Image (tube, rainbow, N blue to C red; front, side, top):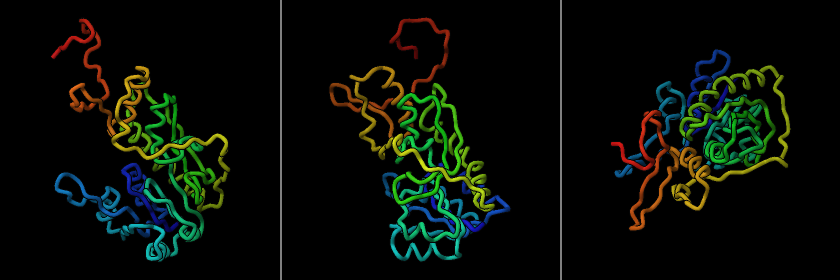
Length: 265
């Protein structure tokens, strides 16, 4: 099938590579967000998705808004069978959803209808969930509320961080996506409506969300430190106003003797 890939976040890179390596599917073009300023010098930094597409000479488009007519015209080029979206960063309008012959599908980093929105990975750890997963879904105009195609589950480790869970879910992407595309190509793809009454929603995180509220339980604080590592990070302030960054604890030696709070190095 002819595929257009829309993605910006690194979680989508393994899936993009899987489509490129597939003998059954062909990538027409890649859409990714415009390059963003990075570092103190504000130099423009391309997404990893763009870097890969450039290395394989895949046509790249970076519209400011996917709903603009120019972007819609670019998406229509090549008459795609399927649009694949993984962490693109914009909601697709109805005019875009009508473009592909077969479907627009999205990979979402939760077991929908749980954690619709921008921070499902952090939410699963923060809430102490024992498992999460990756879902392929048909895109609708609402936020992550389209019909379900297929999913894969993943057990959350006790010391899981947002970063480690992100990478493990990213690694699930290729198998789930190729299976979903193959089902679509044969006309045998399932389509199950989400249970909207069970839906939960999570919002985009900012750095300010990482401040520790010491009135919360130790268990919740520990989960937050892990969930928000590496983004947006966690921090607190000393009484003198000094900002202190907090990182997940690491056990370096389990049989060490000593009183809690003693500095060992």
